[in-house]
Length: 199
Image 1 (tube, rainbow, N blue to C red):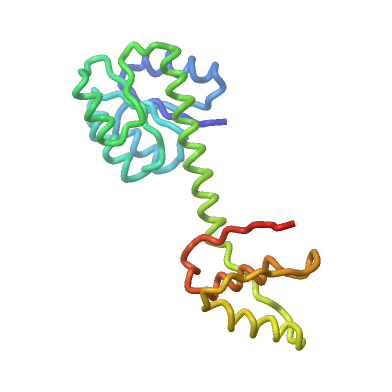
Image 2 (image 1 turned 90 degrees about the horizontal axis):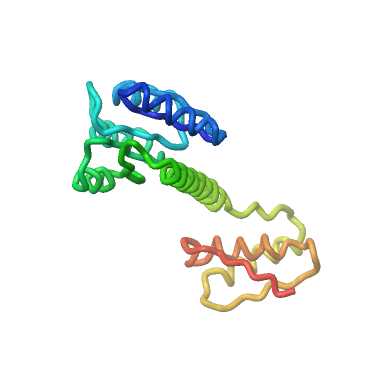
């Protein structure tokens, strides 16, 4: 269940937004000002924040700047009943996901929250894929038989060249492993390896 933090000094706005979002099956927490928001986001990772602009102690724009440092991947939806277009533009320039006027239109709010969730999911998925790619170093070729030694020597000999290489063999013989090692030892090892199964 996606977790959202509502930051607004008006308790009635917080409660209304909370009721709407909980009805839509979001887990919701509240903060009364920017300072409380910063404390909460240091302890908890939220999928999105709904942040008012005019608040005591620390206004929403200042809180937004600090959120961008502490949790740069968390989408922040700014809301305000006092803001003009320039304030909305400033908020988006400082990293806000979107800006909604108070009182918020229910449909616009829900669509914006869903879009923020989609962005959050894409960021998470991208991080997972980058981690997989970076940990995709080929396994070691294990063995000391004459055939394995010949394969290792062939890889060492052909990998540094610009020649095209076709790796053939029966299923399960390690063609993909050989291809990865040829790539790893080539001058193009900093570029992606694109696998094509010719079967």
